Image 1 (tube, rainbow, N blue to C red):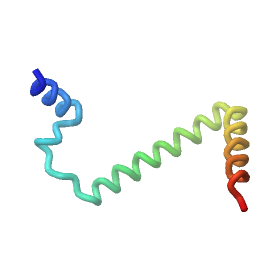
Image 2: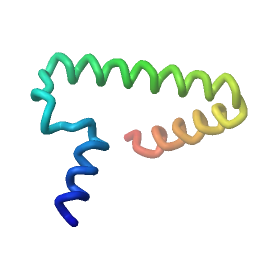
Image 3: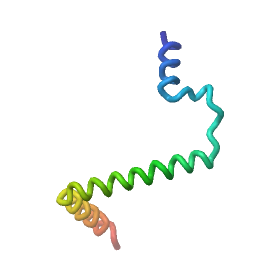
Image 4: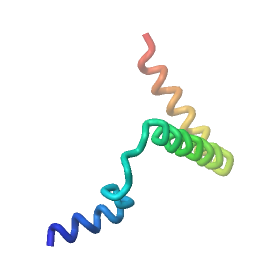
Length: 69
């Protein structure tokens, strides 16, 4: 039963056993794409919910001030 679960987990992970190892350049490209999309999503959320975004900026500024010397 455990072997079947492991196979299902591998299938959910995209079949890592069948695919060749990912090159560092491919990993960086995928990571850059992810970070671009994340930044875009955060910017959209800030535009859609300006009050929440302002409060988050204020909290972040307060955290930064806390650790200044």
